[in-house]
Image 1 (tube, rainbow, N blue to C red):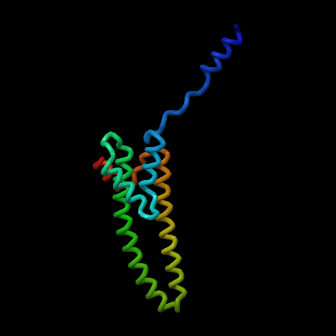
Image 2 (cartoon, rainbow, N blue to C red):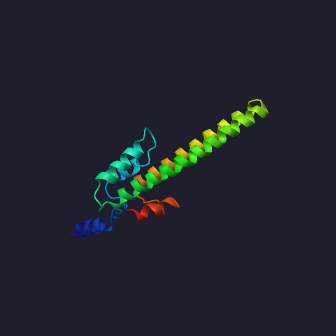
Image 3 (cartoon, rainbow, N blue to C red):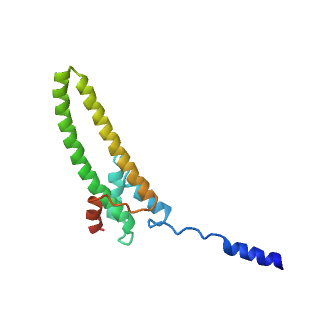
Length: 146
């Protein structure tokens, strides 16, 4: 009899599993993360499919799809503008420094692309964890449309 009581007490002391993250199921979190994968326009296709087909009850997916599309447009404008400015800078600096400055500018462009990739992967990881991470200005704007 005492052994039976101790097993019941041990069962009662077991920690309860953590509550699921706000994203819900693993499939929902995976699709939320796919909204931010910038390879071969996966993020564009998945975000548009979610916005066109998903029910209104799934605010997690709607938020990530909307935020991803807005971030994609803003990023494209910023990246294109910076590349044009840096391209002209590369030409001018290369003429003045006989090509050495051009290599430095190309390195800066590569760092800019790497930072862009890290941001997208961070957002994908947050979505896969079930977190509705808001990008400072874009997230509040996206939240209005969810």
